[in-house]
Image (cartoon, rainbow, N blue to C red; front, top):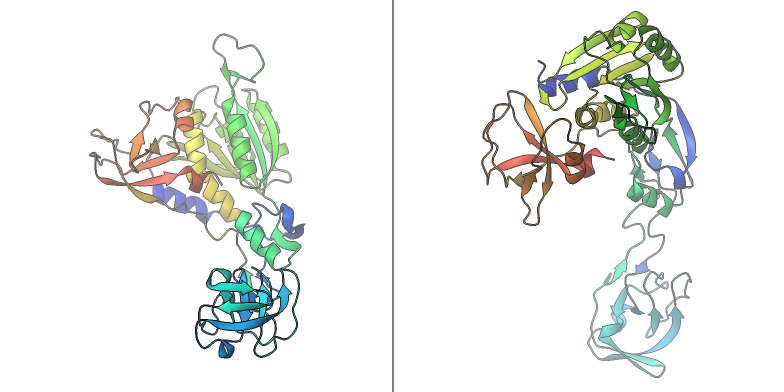
Length: 397
């Protein structure tokens, strides 16, 4: 069996990154990958800006606490004041630009308003309680480098410098189908021996969360001719064909011979649990990945193997999830010879606990969990030891 890290490296080595780009509105760029650097067309802040409500002053006019100054103007956010005359103060509010001549702000809690004057009970230093022009972003700075995958915070940053459209790489096009005459769609009656097709649902959502354009070919009958026909159709105009089930060597498992007939296929046995079998190949110009039919194995293998492959194909700079080192609040005395990814969650005391049913068919365990405990092969875990934990927050976005 291939070690997990070796298998992932081999899979990523086969990536052919998307190069075509398109313009999209910043507002709908979530999940897209930047094709070029984004430079700010403005400085942020554009002018010296007050950090709080108070009074803008010239520090040379307030050399000691108790200084009394006439209030010459009022500057709310969104307006620009006039030059601050020597020996005066300006009433100013959070986010408002300082008037020319002012070099500090004294917060209102350190001042006393008295008629048309203010008593400044604090001698400020130059630059106090203000953001200098360009102190966060200079005009022309790269604010978002190419290969950045857009999240809410990157979208907000782009909007804050006035970027209305972004050059992004086109969406990855993925063809999805399941195989198995036993599969039944939810809503239909379940015959004896039938299984509701959960893989179609969870894989489609996972692909769409990664920003893929998905063509869903549904359930393909367990026939070689039908499987070959769908593969030929799926290869047209798609970057990846993703399937679940049918990659074993049983008489009714037709995906493997179908892919071999229409393209090329490797069947990997990866030293990971759950999710040992993974098929990789190509049909025409489209890459092919075949996942296990077991829904838990399919889910875990997608997160750990397919997700990095898709992100790399989309041109993202970061594709490997970051693990947390946390305390194990469980014992795992009989480890497998494969690397195990246990359904787990963080408890109220900050430790990691695991679901009681780690069976490959226990879909309820992935709902109960908020991540995966990464247990090295042949390594027993004792309560209190530190382990790697992969939170869903790193795997489901």
